[in-house]
Amino acid sequence: MDQIESRREMVSRLRGKGYITGQRVYDAMMAVPRHLFLPAALRDRAYVDTPMEIGYGQTISAPHMVAIMAEALEVLPGMKVLEVGAGSGYHAAVLAELVRPRGSVFTMEIVPELVERARRNLEETGYGSEVKVVLSDGSLGLADEAPFDRISVAAAAPSVPLPLVEQLGDGGILLVPVGERGYQELIMVRRQGDKVLRSEMGGVVFVPLIGEHGHHEHQVK
Image (cartoon, rainbow, N blue to C red):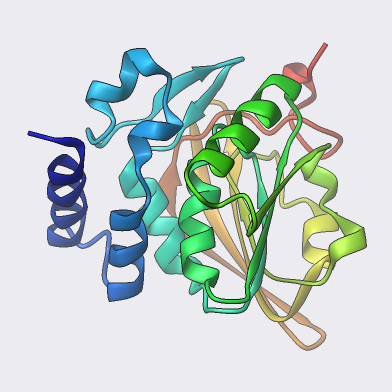
């Protein structure tokens, strides 16, 4: 079975299980070649629904988690999206598909080697013009580009980082896993005018967020 057919089977399976509910997320995940965001040794398993290690203590999220977050974010064409935790760039590419046309994605990564890898992967797969990869502490957000319509955090914080809430535009949505290593709750924050509404979306498992508002025992040395 070739990679395209494997991807089609994976995405169809995610829809069958209810992780994908809309056509836009289905199309976005069909469009992005996940295998090209993985190390060569792992590419034959690219369309298995599991997280995979990409080095430096980081992982590429399981496809079902990418689907859950993409659906919950309700990303629309033309939006400005911030992602915290670029990893290899895969989730940013899915977000880029969802903001097309005229939208933009900023993805932040604190590990320099992964910044370079994500940039290369995104360029080689055709997303370089829509996604800007930033080497910085993602827990602080990207104030110079705020406000954002959507913010997606792909690492677990001890609490919802206040800078990210402050950088959320009116009507915006923030998704962030909150908790300790091994188990977290996926938190959705919605800004409606001066109100900030918080809800819980269920248990998840992510690597720890590194940075000022992250888990300090896991900081980059």
